[in-house]
Length: 131
Image (cartoon, rainbow, N blue to C red; front, side):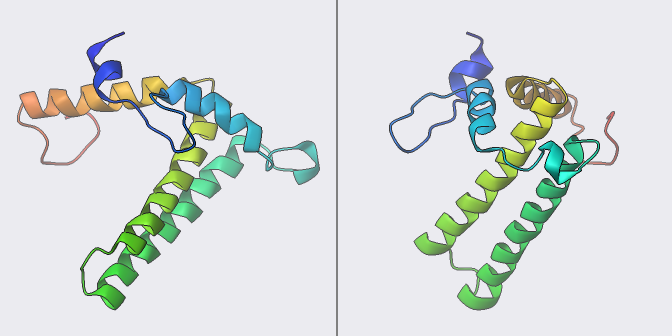
């Protein structure tokens, strides 16, 4: 097990501890109802991209209301709502990775490697993917 896997584990309620991103990705297959032939979505991965967009909008709405209704004071209730929306985005990202044959652990690891490299080179600020 590498350092990233050891230090960045995903924990779930219902007694499932230390689940890795790949395990989560596989578990999401159980609840995937949106890409069957009867849905007529082609390519099938489009469903997941639309889901990421929709759930991201819902997360933004929760955060907007956090400021509008709660004046920026984080309540336990608001935190739970935000966690749920973040989980929905994570689900769609895991399904999208699965559709492309990408291991979800690889997504997380590559992202951290990229960001740590940028930090080391003092390139966290700025624009562009290849900084």
